[in-house]
Length: 342
Ligand SMILES: NC(=O)c1ccc[n+]([C@@H]2O[C@H](COP(=O)([O-])OP(=O)(O)OC[C@H]3O[C@@H](n4cnc5c(N)ncnc54)[C@H](OP(=O)(O)O)[C@@H]3O)[C@@H](O)[C@H]2O)c1
View (cartoon, rainbow, N blue to C red):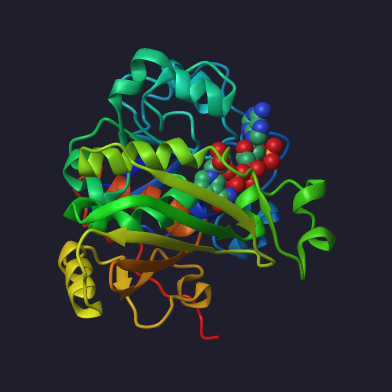
């Protein structure tokens, strides 16, 4: 079987670790290059000890001249914000890009500047498609490059897309989202440090989280209407997982059955979305590419709960799902694995 060659920029971080865990066992992929910053030169399995005995790859420094990478078919960027957009223009034209950072998610340069405090990537942005397969599959199939959605954005949009698309919503969408500490990456910082976060719970970045405009932009694309959204983020005392609680109002009374039918129909061809009764639970999506969703209604009030693994469906798993679609592989290839019980 012909394999495509992948490069991973930023393979020593948490997103890179998950890309390696998935791509090393993908039947259609060979890893041609994996880079790191301060971990360059080390064996991959010395940094990601879960990969011991499974790979002899080394982390390499970012090449000075990226134009020599003509044998690479797809490049994944799992670097801090601001770095992918500096490197992308240097790659050979034929290389397809999947950017896990926020660099290529926002179309409006002013909004980008406001939330990322940096200049927008400019013209090349028009070549990037928002990589949420469940709402944008056709565009991804024919995309040249992919802006992989943010983790909070993934959980939130998947929770609300069927209702947003239905045109039944009225009023403001209110989202209360929570994340585990791995959402902040592998480097320790005072506010993400274990003694600070364990057994604790707090809100952060009220009204200013960088996923607010990304969620609004994509919901507007789905509905064709401006999105009226309040989105708040919180820190959960767990390592992995995102849980989004979304509160919505409909213009007509819906029964629980009506609502569930709407979601079942919308996600009928989306293997990685599972509708559940009661509440989703981070435990059952952890380490997987699944998003579990539950819906509840009382008259015109609706509550939707969703849970994902921020590093898999919220990052590396979704990136591989997008690669599969771009290269004509089955969307599920390399991604059908469960977490553990418990
Ligand atoms: N964590 C999540 O849940 C999540 C979810 C969705 C999207 N994302 C996005 O994905 C990207 C990666 O996130 P992450 O959590 O994997 O971050 P991370 O754990 O901090 O990893 C960052 C990676 O970038 C490398 N790097 C940093 N500065 C570098 C430099 N100057 N030159 C070369 N390499 C450099 C690091 O290498 P060294 O450590 O070797 O220096 C590491 O491999 C971010 O843009 C993030 O916003 C993260």
